Length: 67
Image 1 (tube, helix red, strand yellow):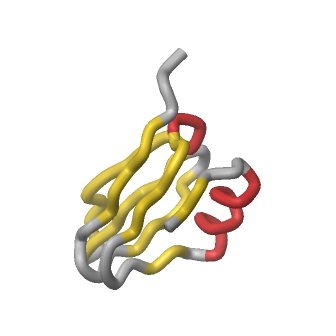
Image 2 (image 1 turned 90 degrees about the vertical axis):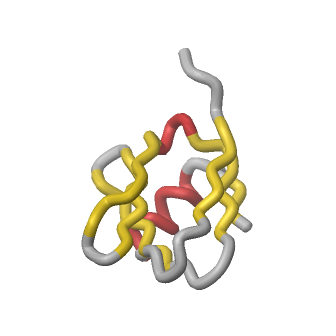
């Protein structure tokens, strides 16, 4: 079992999208990072970052702290 972790998103203009049981960070139409939702404890967004409604709903449902 893997430890839950904190993920920082700093890429300007990035969009966070849910893809199945994963959260993808997309910038300029390319995936730049990906993390399994079950591994995520906290999400820190720095700058102009957009969350899709599906991504936000998944974070809330799983109790992931998002700042």
